[in-house]
Image 1 (cartoon, rainbow, N blue to C red):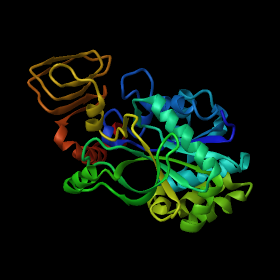
Image 2 (image 1 turned 45 degrees about the vertical axis):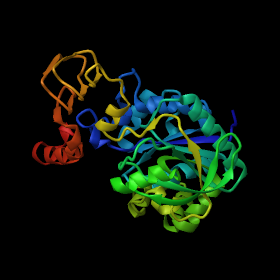
Image 3 (image 1 turned 180 degrees about the vertical axis):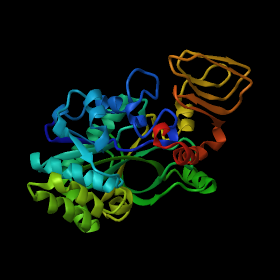
Image 4 (image 1 turned 180 degrees about the horizontal axis):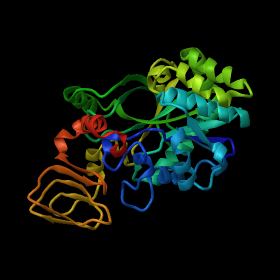
Length: 359
Protein backbone atom coordinates (compact mmCIF):
# COMPACT_ATOMS: atom_id res chain seq x y z
CA UNK A 1 0.00 0.00 0.00
CA UNK A 2 1.36 3.40 -1.03
CA UNK A 3 2.14 5.60 1.99
CA UNK A 4 1.33 8.68 -0.13
CA UNK A 5 -2.33 7.63 -0.38
CA UNK A 6 -4.64 9.69 1.84
CA UNK A 7 -8.39 9.61 2.36
CA UNK A 8 -10.78 12.39 3.34
CA UNK A 9 -14.14 11.08 4.54
CA UNK A 10 -16.85 13.74 4.61
CA UNK A 11 -19.07 12.96 7.60
CA UNK A 12 -20.71 16.21 8.65
CA UNK A 13 -24.20 15.93 7.18
CA UNK A 14 -27.45 15.67 9.11
CA UNK A 15 -29.31 13.23 6.83
CA UNK A 16 -32.72 14.76 7.55
CA UNK A 17 -34.39 12.69 4.82
CA UNK A 18 -33.71 9.60 6.95
CA UNK A 19 -35.71 10.94 9.88
CA UNK A 20 -36.81 9.62 12.34
CA UNK A 21 -33.76 7.35 12.65
CA UNK A 22 -31.38 10.09 11.55
CA UNK A 23 -31.44 13.16 13.78
CA UNK A 24 -29.14 16.11 14.35
CA UNK A 25 -27.80 14.32 17.45
CA UNK A 26 -27.05 11.07 15.60
CA UNK A 27 -27.09 11.50 11.80
CA UNK A 28 -27.45 8.57 9.43
CA UNK A 29 -23.70 8.09 8.81
CA UNK A 30 -23.37 6.99 12.44
CA UNK A 31 -26.30 4.55 12.26
CA UNK A 32 -26.66 0.94 11.22
CA UNK A 33 -29.12 1.91 8.52
CA UNK A 34 -28.53 -1.35 6.61
CA UNK A 35 -29.11 -3.60 9.61
CA UNK A 36 -25.68 -5.28 9.28
CA UNK A 37 -24.26 -4.41 12.70
CA UNK A 38 -22.04 -1.55 11.49
CA UNK A 39 -22.67 2.12 10.79
CA UNK A 40 -22.33 3.58 7.31
CA UNK A 41 -19.25 5.49 8.46
CA UNK A 42 -17.63 2.32 9.78
CA UNK A 43 -18.35 0.49 6.52
CA UNK A 44 -16.82 3.37 4.54
CA UNK A 45 -13.68 3.35 6.69
CA UNK A 46 -13.23 -0.40 6.33
CA UNK A 47 -13.57 -0.21 2.55
CA UNK A 48 -11.05 2.59 2.25
CA UNK A 49 -8.53 0.76 4.46
CA UNK A 50 -7.87 -1.46 1.45
CA UNK A 51 -6.34 1.53 -0.35
CA UNK A 52 -5.11 3.91 2.37
CA UNK A 53 -3.22 3.21 5.63
CA UNK A 54 -5.18 4.05 8.77
CA UNK A 55 -2.80 6.83 9.77
CA UNK A 56 -3.59 8.64 6.49
CA UNK A 57 -7.31 9.11 7.10
CA UNK A 58 -9.00 12.40 7.93
CA UNK A 59 -12.65 12.44 8.93
CA UNK A 60 -14.16 15.89 8.43
CA UNK A 61 -17.28 16.32 10.52
CA UNK A 62 -19.21 18.78 12.62
CA UNK A 63 -17.52 19.54 15.92
CA UNK A 64 -20.41 17.95 17.84
CA UNK A 65 -19.71 14.52 16.32
CA UNK A 66 -16.07 14.05 17.33
CA UNK A 67 -16.93 11.54 20.07
CA UNK A 68 -19.13 9.51 17.72
CA UNK A 69 -16.35 9.32 15.12
CA UNK A 70 -13.72 8.15 17.61
CA UNK A 71 -16.10 5.60 19.13
CA UNK A 72 -16.83 4.08 15.73
CA UNK A 73 -13.27 4.31 14.35
CA UNK A 74 -10.99 3.70 17.35
CA UNK A 75 -8.08 2.96 15.00
CA UNK A 76 -7.51 6.66 14.30
CA UNK A 77 -6.11 9.44 16.50
CA UNK A 78 -8.02 12.49 17.63
CA UNK A 79 -6.00 14.78 15.33
CA UNK A 80 -7.42 12.85 12.38
CA UNK A 81 -10.92 14.11 13.20
CA UNK A 82 -11.26 17.57 11.67
CA UNK A 83 -14.01 19.43 13.46
CA UNK A 84 -15.88 21.98 11.39
CA UNK A 85 -17.43 24.76 13.48
CA UNK A 86 -20.31 25.12 11.00
CA UNK A 87 -21.55 23.50 7.80
CA UNK A 88 -20.25 25.14 4.65
CA UNK A 89 -20.76 22.39 2.02
CA UNK A 90 -18.05 20.25 0.44
CA UNK A 91 -15.52 22.79 -0.91
CA UNK A 92 -14.46 24.23 2.50
CA UNK A 93 -14.59 20.70 3.93
CA UNK A 94 -12.10 19.48 1.32
CA UNK A 95 -9.91 22.58 1.65
CA UNK A 96 -9.63 21.93 5.39
CA UNK A 97 -8.60 18.33 4.74
CA UNK A 98 -6.08 19.43 2.13
CA UNK A 99 -4.47 21.82 4.59
CA UNK A 100 -3.98 19.15 7.24
CA UNK A 101 -2.63 16.64 4.72
CA UNK A 102 -0.16 19.17 3.31
CA UNK A 103 1.40 19.63 6.74
CA UNK A 104 2.31 15.94 6.71
CA UNK A 105 2.87 15.07 3.05
CA UNK A 106 2.91 17.61 0.20
CA UNK A 107 3.23 14.71 -2.26
CA UNK A 108 -0.03 13.11 -1.20
CA UNK A 109 -2.60 11.60 -3.53
CA UNK A 110 -6.08 11.96 -2.08
CA UNK A 111 -9.38 10.12 -2.27
CA UNK A 112 -12.41 12.11 -1.13
CA UNK A 113 -15.54 10.15 -0.30
CA UNK A 114 -18.87 10.67 1.43
CA UNK A 115 -19.40 8.61 4.57
CA UNK A 116 -22.85 7.23 3.79
CA UNK A 117 -22.87 5.46 0.44
CA UNK A 118 -23.68 1.84 -0.32
CA UNK A 119 -21.16 -0.20 -2.33
CA UNK A 120 -22.30 -3.71 -3.24
CA UNK A 121 -19.27 -4.93 -5.20
CA UNK A 122 -16.30 -3.92 -3.07
CA UNK A 123 -13.70 -5.77 -5.18
CA UNK A 124 -14.70 -3.78 -8.26
CA UNK A 125 -14.79 -0.58 -6.19
CA UNK A 126 -11.26 -1.13 -4.86
CA UNK A 127 -10.02 -1.89 -8.37
CA UNK A 128 -11.40 1.46 -9.59
CA UNK A 129 -9.87 3.33 -6.64
CA UNK A 130 -6.48 1.66 -7.01
CA UNK A 131 -6.29 2.51 -10.70
CA UNK A 132 -7.56 6.05 -10.21
CA UNK A 133 -5.22 6.93 -7.34
CA UNK A 134 -2.29 5.61 -9.36
CA UNK A 135 -3.24 7.82 -12.33
CA UNK A 136 -3.70 11.03 -10.34
CA UNK A 137 -0.39 10.42 -8.55
CA UNK A 138 1.39 10.77 -11.88
CA UNK A 139 -0.78 13.17 -13.87
CA UNK A 140 -2.25 16.61 -13.24
CA UNK A 141 -5.93 15.70 -13.45
CA UNK A 142 -8.98 15.93 -11.21
CA UNK A 143 -10.74 12.59 -11.33
CA UNK A 144 -14.31 11.75 -10.37
CA UNK A 145 -16.03 8.37 -10.39
CA UNK A 146 -18.98 8.01 -12.74
CA UNK A 147 -21.54 5.24 -12.22
CA UNK A 148 -23.10 3.52 -15.20
CA UNK A 149 -26.82 4.37 -14.89
CA UNK A 150 -29.41 1.61 -14.78
CA UNK A 151 -32.52 3.78 -14.94
CA UNK A 152 -33.48 7.41 -15.71
CA UNK A 153 -33.13 8.55 -12.10
CA UNK A 154 -33.99 12.20 -11.44
CA UNK A 155 -32.39 12.24 -7.98
CA UNK A 156 -28.78 12.09 -9.17
CA UNK A 157 -26.47 14.50 -10.93
CA UNK A 158 -25.13 13.35 -14.31
CA UNK A 159 -21.73 13.56 -15.99
CA UNK A 160 -21.46 13.66 -19.77
CA UNK A 161 -18.31 12.04 -21.06
CA UNK A 162 -16.10 13.32 -23.83
CA UNK A 163 -13.19 11.63 -25.56
CA UNK A 164 -11.43 8.68 -24.00
CA UNK A 165 -8.32 9.64 -22.06
CA UNK A 166 -7.06 6.12 -21.29
CA UNK A 167 -8.32 2.53 -21.41
CA UNK A 168 -5.81 0.82 -19.13
CA UNK A 169 -7.74 -1.41 -16.65
CA UNK A 170 -10.61 1.09 -16.43
CA UNK A 171 -11.82 3.61 -19.01
CA UNK A 172 -11.14 7.25 -18.16
CA UNK A 173 -12.89 9.99 -20.16
CA UNK A 174 -12.54 13.72 -20.36
CA UNK A 175 -15.60 15.27 -18.74
CA UNK A 176 -17.75 17.27 -21.12
CA UNK A 177 -20.57 18.58 -18.90
CA UNK A 178 -22.20 18.22 -15.50
CA UNK A 179 -26.00 18.30 -15.11
CA UNK A 180 -27.79 18.48 -11.76
CA UNK A 181 -30.88 16.31 -11.17
CA UNK A 182 -32.62 16.50 -14.56
CA UNK A 183 -36.32 16.19 -15.27
CA UNK A 184 -37.51 12.68 -16.13
CA UNK A 185 -37.66 13.18 -19.91
CA UNK A 186 -34.11 14.53 -19.97
CA UNK A 187 -32.93 11.69 -17.73
CA UNK A 188 -34.41 9.23 -20.23
CA UNK A 189 -32.45 10.91 -23.03
CA UNK A 190 -29.27 10.72 -20.94
CA UNK A 191 -29.78 7.01 -20.32
CA UNK A 192 -30.46 6.25 -23.97
CA UNK A 193 -27.42 8.18 -25.22
CA UNK A 194 -24.89 6.09 -23.31
CA UNK A 195 -22.69 9.18 -22.80
CA UNK A 196 -23.97 10.05 -19.34
CA UNK A 197 -23.06 8.60 -15.95
CA UNK A 198 -24.32 9.23 -12.44
CA UNK A 199 -22.12 11.56 -10.41
CA UNK A 200 -20.96 9.51 -7.40
CA UNK A 201 -19.45 12.42 -5.47
CA UNK A 202 -16.23 10.42 -5.00
CA UNK A 203 -13.04 12.17 -6.16
CA UNK A 204 -9.33 11.49 -6.59
CA UNK A 205 -6.48 13.92 -7.17
CA UNK A 206 -2.95 14.82 -6.19
CA UNK A 207 -2.74 17.41 -3.42
CA UNK A 208 -0.82 19.74 -5.73
CA UNK A 209 -3.49 19.45 -8.45
CA UNK A 210 -6.44 20.25 -6.19
CA UNK A 211 -4.57 23.10 -4.48
CA UNK A 212 -3.90 24.69 -7.86
CA UNK A 213 -7.58 24.33 -8.72
CA UNK A 214 -8.64 26.01 -5.46
CA UNK A 215 -6.21 28.86 -6.12
CA UNK A 216 -7.64 29.36 -9.62
CA UNK A 217 -11.38 28.80 -9.14
CA UNK A 218 -12.00 29.39 -5.42
CA UNK A 219 -9.24 31.86 -4.50
CA UNK A 220 -11.13 33.16 -1.45
CA UNK A 221 -11.35 29.66 0.03
CA UNK A 222 -7.75 28.91 -0.90
CA UNK A 223 -6.54 32.10 0.75
CA UNK A 224 -8.41 31.42 3.97
CA UNK A 225 -6.95 27.94 4.41
CA UNK A 226 -3.53 28.44 2.81
CA UNK A 227 -2.75 31.78 4.47
CA UNK A 228 -4.93 32.37 7.53
CA UNK A 229 -4.41 28.85 8.83
CA UNK A 230 -0.64 29.23 8.74
CA UNK A 231 -1.12 31.21 11.94
CA UNK A 232 -0.06 28.98 14.83
CA UNK A 233 -3.26 29.96 16.62
CA UNK A 234 -5.49 29.04 13.71
CA UNK A 235 -7.58 26.59 15.75
CA UNK A 236 -8.82 29.56 17.74
CA UNK A 237 -9.78 31.34 14.55
CA UNK A 238 -11.36 28.39 12.73
CA UNK A 239 -14.81 29.79 13.52
CA UNK A 240 -13.86 33.05 11.82
CA UNK A 241 -12.37 31.24 8.83
CA UNK A 242 -15.50 29.17 8.29
CA UNK A 243 -17.77 32.16 8.74
CA UNK A 244 -15.96 33.83 5.84
CA UNK A 245 -16.11 30.76 3.58
CA UNK A 246 -18.85 30.64 0.95
CA UNK A 247 -21.34 27.80 1.26
CA UNK A 248 -20.34 26.05 -1.94
CA UNK A 249 -19.90 22.52 -3.24
CA UNK A 250 -16.71 21.23 -4.80
CA UNK A 251 -18.73 20.33 -7.91
CA UNK A 252 -19.99 23.86 -8.50
CA UNK A 253 -16.90 25.64 -7.24
CA UNK A 254 -14.24 23.66 -9.11
CA UNK A 255 -15.31 20.54 -11.02
CA UNK A 256 -17.75 22.34 -13.32
CA UNK A 257 -15.20 25.06 -14.11
CA UNK A 258 -11.84 23.33 -14.40
CA UNK A 259 -10.49 22.15 -17.76
CA UNK A 260 -8.60 19.14 -16.40
CA UNK A 261 -11.55 17.16 -15.00
CA UNK A 262 -11.86 13.49 -15.96
CA UNK A 263 -14.15 10.62 -15.06
CA UNK A 264 -13.35 6.96 -14.47
CA UNK A 265 -16.16 4.65 -15.55
CA UNK A 266 -17.46 2.17 -13.00
CA UNK A 267 -20.28 -0.21 -12.20
CA UNK A 268 -19.90 -1.56 -8.67
CA UNK A 269 -23.43 -1.50 -7.27
CA UNK A 270 -23.50 2.06 -5.94
CA UNK A 271 -26.27 3.95 -4.17
CA UNK A 272 -25.93 7.24 -2.32
CA UNK A 273 -28.60 6.19 0.21
CA UNK A 274 -30.05 9.67 0.20
CA UNK A 275 -33.61 8.65 1.07
CA UNK A 276 -35.70 5.82 2.47
CA UNK A 277 -36.79 5.15 -1.10
CA UNK A 278 -33.15 4.69 -2.14
CA UNK A 279 -32.66 2.21 0.70
CA UNK A 280 -35.84 0.40 -0.36
CA UNK A 281 -34.53 0.07 -3.92
CA UNK A 282 -31.34 -1.66 -2.78
CA UNK A 283 -32.81 -3.85 -0.02
CA UNK A 284 -33.80 -7.50 -0.18
CA UNK A 285 -37.59 -7.81 -0.43
CA UNK A 286 -39.98 -10.40 0.97
CA UNK A 287 -42.58 -12.24 -1.11
CA UNK A 288 -44.86 -9.19 -0.98
CA UNK A 289 -42.11 -6.80 -2.07
CA UNK A 290 -41.64 -5.31 1.39
CA UNK A 291 -38.13 -4.30 2.53
CA UNK A 292 -37.90 -4.96 6.27
CA UNK A 293 -35.10 -4.02 8.68
CA UNK A 294 -35.27 -5.91 11.98
CA UNK A 295 -37.12 -9.03 13.08
CA UNK A 296 -39.98 -7.46 15.02
CA UNK A 297 -42.45 -6.61 12.27
CA UNK A 298 -45.44 -8.90 11.78
CA UNK A 299 -46.80 -8.07 8.35
CA UNK A 300 -50.21 -9.00 6.94
CA UNK A 301 -51.81 -8.09 3.62
CA UNK A 302 -49.22 -5.35 3.03
CA UNK A 303 -47.11 -4.76 -0.07
CA UNK A 304 -44.27 -2.58 -1.40
CA UNK A 305 -43.39 -1.05 1.97
CA UNK A 306 -40.11 0.13 3.53
CA UNK A 307 -40.28 -0.95 7.19
CA UNK A 308 -37.80 -0.39 10.04
CA UNK A 309 -38.73 -1.43 13.59
CA UNK A 310 -36.38 -1.23 16.60
CA UNK A 311 -35.32 -4.28 18.63
CA UNK A 312 -37.30 -3.29 21.69
CA UNK A 313 -40.68 -3.05 19.92
CA UNK A 314 -43.14 -5.34 18.20
CA UNK A 315 -45.11 -3.91 15.28
CA UNK A 316 -48.14 -5.41 13.56
CA UNK A 317 -48.68 -3.99 10.07
CA UNK A 318 -51.88 -4.94 8.28
CA UNK A 319 -53.36 -3.65 5.05
CA UNK A 320 -50.66 -1.06 4.29
CA UNK A 321 -49.34 -0.55 0.77
CA UNK A 322 -46.50 1.43 -0.79
CA UNK A 323 -45.55 3.18 2.46
CA UNK A 324 -42.52 4.05 4.57
CA UNK A 325 -42.99 2.89 8.16
CA UNK A 326 -40.08 3.74 10.47
CA UNK A 327 -40.09 3.65 14.27
CA UNK A 328 -37.03 5.09 16.02
CA UNK A 329 -38.27 4.25 19.50
CA UNK A 330 -39.11 7.89 20.16
CA UNK A 331 -40.69 8.93 16.88
CA UNK A 332 -42.81 7.20 14.26
CA UNK A 333 -43.03 8.00 10.55
CA UNK A 334 -45.73 6.65 8.27
CA UNK A 335 -46.00 8.15 4.80
CA UNK A 336 -46.42 7.12 1.18
CA UNK A 337 -43.15 6.27 -0.55
CA UNK A 338 -44.16 8.60 -3.37
CA UNK A 339 -44.42 11.48 -0.87
CA UNK A 340 -41.08 11.05 0.90
CA UNK A 341 -39.86 14.43 -0.35
CA UNK A 342 -42.15 15.86 2.35
CA UNK A 343 -39.99 14.40 5.14
CA UNK A 344 -37.85 17.54 5.32
CA UNK A 345 -41.01 19.59 5.77
CA UNK A 346 -42.19 17.19 8.48
CA UNK A 347 -38.87 17.68 10.27
CA UNK A 348 -39.11 21.47 10.01
CA UNK A 349 -42.66 21.45 11.38
CA UNK A 350 -41.65 19.27 14.33
CA UNK A 351 -38.70 21.52 15.08
CA UNK A 352 -40.94 24.59 15.14
CA UNK A 353 -43.64 23.04 17.32
CA UNK A 354 -41.67 20.64 19.53
CA UNK A 355 -38.09 21.91 19.46
CA UNK A 356 -34.89 20.22 18.41
CA UNK A 357 -34.98 17.17 20.70
CA UNK A 358 -36.98 15.04 18.25
CA UNK A 359 -35.09 15.97 15.10
